[in-house]
Amino acid sequence: MTMEFEKDLKVTETNIPGLLVFDLPVHGDNRGWFKENWQRAKMTALGLPDFGPVQNNISFNATRGVTRGIHAEPWDKYISVATGEIFGAWVDLRPGESFGQVYTTRLDPSRAIFVPRGVGNSFQALEDGTAYTYLVNAHWSLEQKKTYTFVNLADPDLGIEWPIPLSECELSEADKAHPTLKDAKSMAPRRTMVTGCNGQLGRAVRKYVEEHGLEGFEFNDIDTFDFSDPAQYDRFDWSLYGTIINCGAYTAVDKAEIAEGRAAAWKANAQGPALLARVAAEHNITLVHVSSDYVFDGTRELHDETESFSPLGVYGQSKAAGDLAVANCPRHYILRSSWVIGEGHNFVKTMKTLSDRVANGELAQVTVVDDQYGRLTFTSDMAEAIFHLLDTGAEYGTYNLTGEGESASWYEIARTVFDLANRNGDKVIPVSTVEYYANATGPVSPRPEYSALDLTKIKNTGYTPARWKETLKKYLNM
Image 1: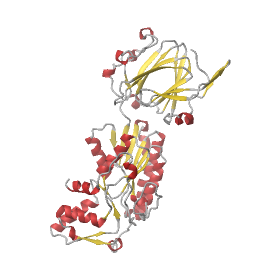
Image 2: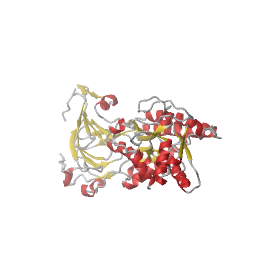
Image 3: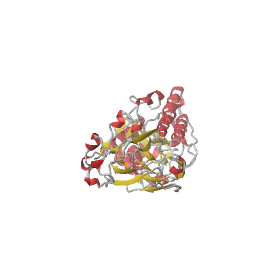
Image 4: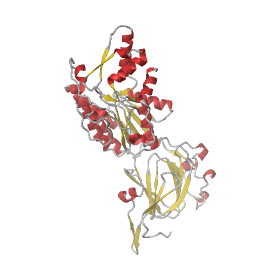
């Protein structure tokens, strides 16, 4: 082996997406050599994912010709040679267009390779006493082992030109028995956990998953996983998960103003998201979290994602605290909404029921506030937007998402619902917020006057929000 010294650190992309080859600077003299085998800051600047290794393994190969693989494991790997030389072959076993793509190269101490999860690898030692080392970002477990997938290194369809014929090599019986590419199974994606699955948004996410035939989803509500309880996190092997979609929240805005509700709001809306953010950061999980217009005081007529928090009540304060915690997770999407409508108790369903009662003569009229302005957000649209961000790999951060269209007051929306349901919108009477709550017997949280959210940022990702008035018509015909 002739190793090249004093190369510049550089990265080369391959035909397999995410498979990266690194040339390493090796400094040598008559005593031997020295190298920086893995340097997080320099290499991430060149495109290496900040994959968070948690374990370092070494493979020693006593004789030339020892050949191992082809194995695809459920973690990312950074592989480099300590001594000797290897010929490596990599096969993409992830589902998708690149399934079956092959890449081969030789590695010595001056070259290393990053192998993303689901790409199978095989190594042939070209010298006696070859040793290579690899960093991985998940701990081995029996549950992890169940997700391994393989392909036979002798499969002629792979077209691998082994420097040493396999008939002359040392192979394990297990490696000899691996299936050919046409029979190989693809690597299943990391799991997705959905919290708060029985709420309005949680039901919409579940429906989206079912309608699109998505696999690997786990649905939890507070009875199966209380994400605000630190003691429950040890029940899960978080290295198996790639995404958490947090649909859970405390939304009783007025009850949050009393002692019991205040504690519940802070636990669900602040402590819970903070715990999720911590576990997501530790395990390279993408965290999706839903925010609210209540994090603002409503003095601006249109709120964008850069506006500073200024919540008026306990509910808004707890949501703002949750947003701050989630924003510290490297891989996060915060989806900010307002006036949410889905499957469950909500304003539109209440107005529909009241319209029916007016039509039946049970009520003469209904009063609704006319000095709060915003747009409806339908959970079906929220679910679509969540998967759009995830599927397109949009830049991490906060995105506003409501229905498109002009803002309206609660009174105007109520009148529209009445007209669509029974053509009795004239029975909706406008009142001010102060008048509406004048005789309230319980706590009343302050409301933002203006709740409309600027949709420019999410539109720039290629997502087109539905017009809320059109979605409202469809919703009432459900």
